Length: 534
Image (cartoon, rainbow, N blue to C red; front, side, top):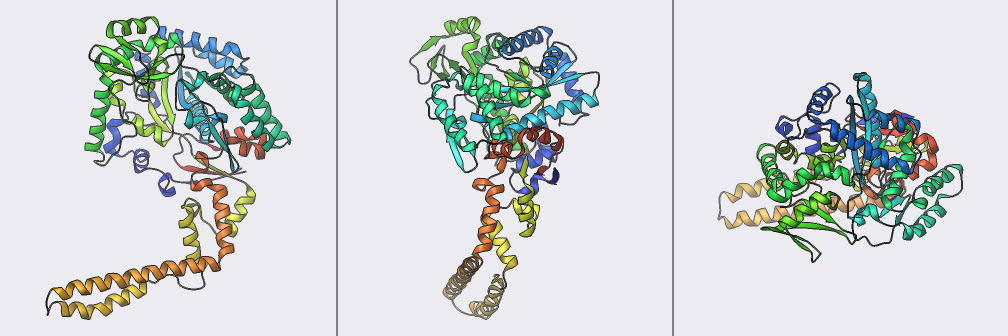
């Protein structure tokens, strides 16, 4: 496989915030703590050693081992399960929603970044152990975000209704969608492997959480990935002190709001928060649904539910049933870092953007803030497509242009006539210089007439320039079509491939070699965008 790189800034597809983070801009420093490097990992190790309790580790290990009783773990997973019990073992974590068939392929890049970083840390610190963790967002309730995936040009959608935490959803009415998907796969050896993945996960699981667990385990168990289902009573009991503080003091709202204001003051006054904190950043889980908790003086109520509780009753429920309380996006990171011996969190650009809002809340609860690492980003294409790229004389930066911009640029380059009419505007300005000289010698009303006419004629040239380009596109329609088809292969829906295409698209081409190849190609500490030819 061949690799090429382009900086994220040069792609034009990433926010200024993320580009500034990667360049370690000083004005962002206080909002994230320790920048992710192998050398800085020692700082995180020391922080975690001083704060992570033996009791928490024991509860974590027991809970994860209980979860793995429903499958037969590989030797690599068994090894890491045992290592987690040791005080010199730390974790690297990524989290993700329970997207159908893993959703877009960047989900795989997150896990691969996590696995590969553990390998690099082990090489740097051989006396310590590092275990990759996938945190399942099983308590999420936004079903519309996870109920579909795109395979080639078709979107497959799970038609169902969700009442509560998506992890608890029954899979009975998913089977028809899976049947339709299998008919599109064909019957070659790679298609049969994908069908086996489905058979061992979605076909034989009680709910979405179990199915996702089994699917991800099949894909990554050979690399020792540990999957964590966090919606567990014993784990929530560890977190109950923070839940109680949230109910009593609404501290997260204050802390996160203050940090947002600081970001605006010290980094960018136009900064728009990725997420906005609520007064109470918790949900309440019942068999009927996941309901947002609101506080009314000394009582609590559930949005979308008639239930309400006195403060005394609600805190008693927390003591007896902590599993009923579910953190939202503001509190979930605290929950994760409280129960794991974690050093790094690996996420996408959007995730890191909201993590930058959270450090003040971590400091308030005296929980070490993890080192934030941007996941790998990649574009995968075949050797056949590479030849088409070369034939069309496209550079790497050309590929990342929006489709219309790319077509316009290439038509300008290959056109036999000059499509740039700026010279006419220059001539027009020269012609109006005489009129400008007359403006100074007569009434001001003449100035308005001159400016209006100049503006009108300039707009006329702009219009003609657009029509000329349109006419030339029509003349060179074959070239336009080839450009558009190629770009759509690489950037479906004019978006990054990794945010649209499901991994099965490439699994059909590459088979079981796909994940091992990506493991070799993706370097978690390389901040550049990776182009991979297979």
